[in-house]
Picture 1 (tube, helix red, strand yellow):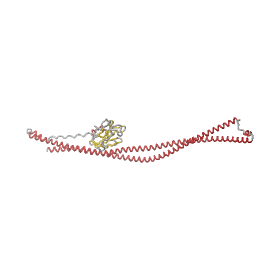
Picture 2 (picture 1 turned 120 degrees about the vertical axis):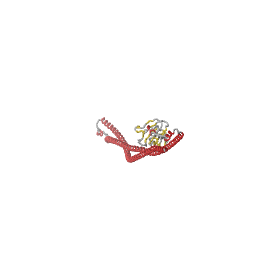
Picture 3 (picture 1 turned 90 degrees about the vertical axis):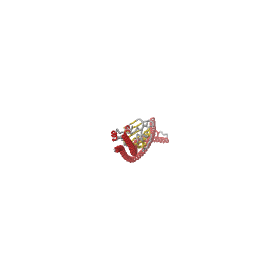
Length: 455
């Protein structure tokens, strides 16, 4: 009867022990499922934002088409302005040539006028020396010796008069021509100044149109570039989130497998302990029965001892689960050169470990490689998903020289991931290490201080 009670108590004890061991694993699976749903929500949100940016990019493309039409119009206007400038420059060149020609003509006229002035002055001076009066035509005629001489004298006087008249008329015409050409030069110079001013206006208009075109193009290119960069970031985030979903599923499977294996080991250990206990109790009982039959002098005390069941050996208490903030190892050797927090106006979501030489980087805990790839910002980077005591974590190892693991690979704590390097946006050889409590997201809102978790 006492053996049946002991067996029943042992069965209940084992059953409760199995229940208490199973509960954390159930909670772990539920927690991982919940975090997997969070990852899917992040994926959905990222997809919506990506669609929004694609729509914005389409709007920018449409705007670019409108602006391109405006640019083509500006290009046409620029070409027309170039033609006007060329024509105006040619016109200015021709005007300068005409002005130079007029100046040469004026110079020639002024030289002839000066020569006539000298001739006329000489004539006047000669007349003054000969009496200071006009020519006495009657004296000239009466002084003729014969009729023939008279005719010659008359003809000579007419020739002199005609020459004087012609000289005076040419002199007057040349002076008028000089004044006229000088007026033409003034007009040409005024036209030249107007053409030059118009040319400057055309050039200023041309520069303005070119600047307007360049500004429009630059603005659209910058806007398109920003959208493309943002979409690249969103696409990179989408790839990480998609890989993260797969990694979380693998971690759930790994956690369930680990729980199943731990449960089997626990049951085997409990069965072994129960068997050893039963064998010990049976041996103790047999020994006491043998002692009772061989010693009648102590029957009363032996009788009392045989009627009471031996006290069961208490089952060992399960070892407490390791604390989550002591489940990671430092991934690389070297001093901490930068901690978590604000740095240069941005949030530094992890710590930097720097050391020269060939410095290996290891996995901080067991897990599944979420993604191993080359990023423009992180350089060679490895993301790992971990399930520790029912809590999911994500670790990031950035700026590696090389990557020794691949996406989807299961790794153990201490597994070689690569060598510390200087790839991506990095100013020197170091490891940028992040721990995210839960899933990774682009805002890094789950980032925690690794110094509180590594040992």
